[in-house]
Image 1: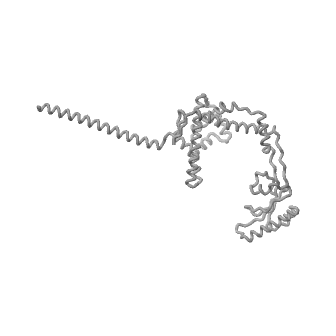
Image 2: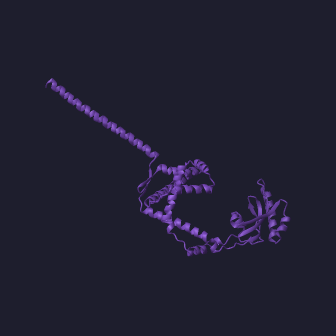
Image 3: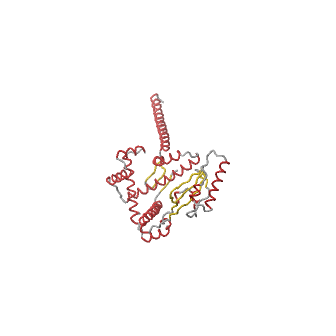
Length: 341
């Protein structure tokens, strides 16, 4: 083999080696790039990721967290034990995610029906909000800023609310009919709600018990109050008993109260009592007390004609809520929904 032939073979071999090394370097670079890319993707997934798929739309973690934040902050501020706090946060997170899925489904239907909202409609709604809250434009902006919102973001939220309201009108409200028979049936079933509220004119006798009083002092006061009660039970007029009460006592006209305005303890105590009768001695936060019913003002039943608009509105809202939930359930059934944990 000549010298020139050997040199050519060596060069050929080196060229192959260099080509091989170049391929190796390229492979190493590609692998390194892939590792870096995968690591970065993992980091990105921690920051943001898909938490639910709703047909052709997705809900991402940052969207869920942003909606959840005010509710989570309130729960954390209540100072629950860690286990209870985790349980409540998990429940609220699940509820919020369900609401976001409901919104996505509603938004998809809005697009399908081509429902739109004009800028004027949005402006008019904001003006009504300002009027109801007695806000100037500047005051509204200041209030929004306290909540971390800008006017454009607020307008977007108002627009979404109007769109969903239009969808509900389109799909549900326009199909609801409340008949006179419906109203009459509801009235008969809930007659007690429309018979007015019985009221009680109350007077009381009270003996204050000091927080520092010992058991002997407390028993003494309780004994005196029972003696007062015995006189009332014997038929002695309330005014006469009051005038001759121990000097430590106070009494007076309390006023007229509906049953729901009274404490649960007093509601229970006056149950079944008539005008001119009194309760037993009650141990209350203000001392030992006896309550005397000087008058009972009977309730007056409201006629159907008077409460008809109120019942219609109540029935309408109940039916809207029921039909909206049924409508959403139907949407769920015919939609592809996947929650990614």
